[in-house]
Length: 449
Image 1 (cartoon, helix red, strand yellow):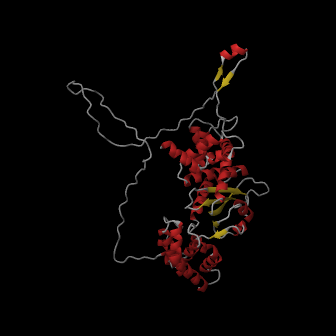
Image 2: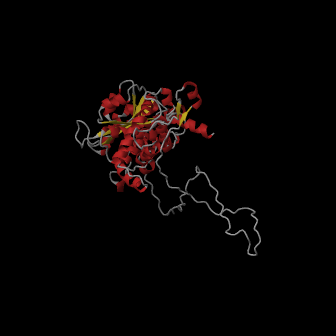
Image 3: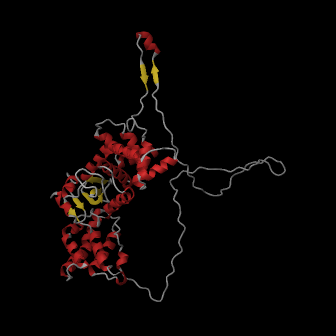
């Protein structure tokens, strides 16, 4: 809900005759509340006093805490199946009866890849932003000689294993009544029928903040056309909150478009801050700041309570804002003129917040998820083929959805790789449903209860 520029930045405040002393900064604490504790008691080197008498232990005295880290351990696991033979049956019928253990299937056939090593590579890349060519040096120091091409193939193969869960997440996503969307450019080298320097795109769709089950879905496409939006939101009927990009006009009449007030406020703030030495907030920006302050107070309320307050307190401010926009005279091509023109063009979509209490005031949640991909993109730069770009979308979807549901993403993706690699080729929906983030979370709670 926080806009990119906070409300305090649009208010000019001056202090005359007083100097406020900054509060002393407190030392940043380390949060280890979820870590187990191991007690270590340091004994005396000698169990006798200076006179040679035997000492009797009467207790212990606390000295300090310290955080311990144990480096990762890597080894090659040689998997065998035990073989048994029934000697009694052989005496009865003369035939040999053999029985074998049931070893789990390999994650990738004829490969050393295991769920744990692929999880570590994926976690480093998609959560910590470490590209594969830099990971290669890390693994070399760990005694594992592996090329970035091999790691890339493992990630692509792992994504193919997890794709059924990815597709089921999309089905659960479009079954919602309220969604948010955004998109960002991405480069794929080479891509069939396109120049190497051309842009591809990562589209994002996610549930709103108040949804019971959170889904953050990334979709790769070589195009930004409206046909992609039409495909991504097929079977969705509800309110889609997004920016003013025209490609979303293709989503169809069954979808109501909701606007983002942060996009509007951003343009008015840029106009007021055109000369940083002389910040001058327009009446429109002042009204927008008041709206954001109210919405910030209502974040924890239910959708019904928020809708009631929006009708009582927010609607008068919005009506005044539109009246001001339509009555203000501005110079053509000025920043203020562009801000007002954009706002008026989005008026119908922006006013949807007065009709739905579930709808967030801004689209910032989806923009933050797009930013997570952008940070990764700045590190790994591009994909060398469309399969790699699609794998990126699958991994990011599962990791960000896990985080949105309060789950440790590393534990979750390792669980998925172990579980889904053992499912049949055409797994039943109930088997895949158990792999979704909120069901994994429930299983973990039951296991630790």
